[in-house]
Image 1 (cartoon, rainbow, N blue to C red):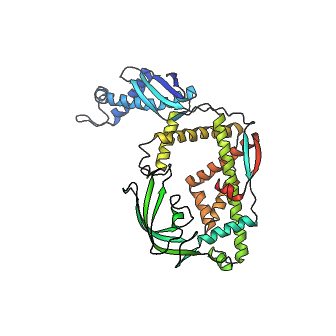
Image 2: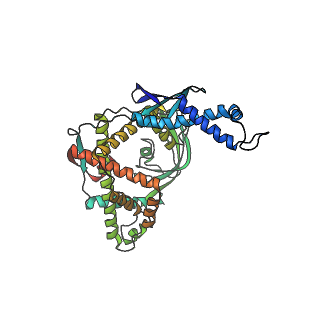
Image 3: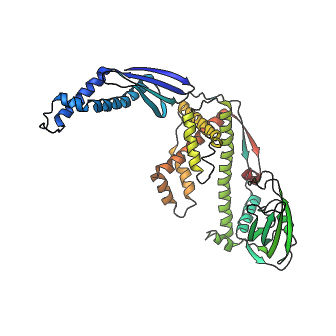
Length: 424
């Protein structure tokens, strides 16, 4: 077997393999002899068909079968001989395959690039630091109260914080546009749920009122039909309601499943949840900086085949987006970034012999399980589902690499308010 490899540019390879005719002929002869013992042909007893007849009838097909089998087996041998690790399936074309001649085929494929981990000593990482005090817990409890708000109709003009129920019909330059009408829509004044400037103009309206509201859609509004344009809305008010918040007491705690300990126990559970959220947010901020630094400092040659595979994965994830398949280009940059990052992470792990700590995997799964009614069942499900378990292992693998990079980098702690950190 003769093998030659050509670099077609970047990570592309073109490998030509030639298998001697003698090797092919030997295998063809062996298969024909086996056929002669088993084939059944009219006019001949089983096992007594002359080899000349077997050869005439079956040699062409046997030759093709043998060369296909040799193509598959010698391809793997050639890769080992040339110390190549291809990405995905190759494109193989038989360029010479005639009885009596040697077999020649060409395999084209990408190989994994050589990845050089950059020096990271001059990387600056800002690690957020936040305190969770009584004020932060109070703010969170207030949010929980607002989630349990009830609305009571009032016979007075609407004010900030009220909810009004309205019909509206909008026009731009006197013409309707897509989504310009709605009926019985609840609008909470000050919530920011409507176009900027809409809610403020509802202050002072009463049930039964009609009012014309003019607003300008933001330039970056999702619908290009109306973005940046001024619309006029005819509004009919059906009702005005004011909010009623529940008292912060033991009864309120029971609403959230706290049977014993009352409000004090709820405060403690809220604090613990906030601490978990804070830890997760800090990890996310640091990880993003680490990944950005790796991609900024490393020069990774990303194989086109890996980008294509990642684009397909992103499109599949975005199923339901009608433009996803048609507009593949918008996914390519994200796909390139993901693949480059995965190659860097893999190289850091290999070079530094980093291991996925099973205790950390278990800890993450247990934390997830705590939010379910039967945590043990959830834990067992994760460990019995290889896909889900692999996802957690990937998280731990990334965290391990992030910690390794942080150890090399310059880290500065940046004080932040809890709310600021969670919204950033």
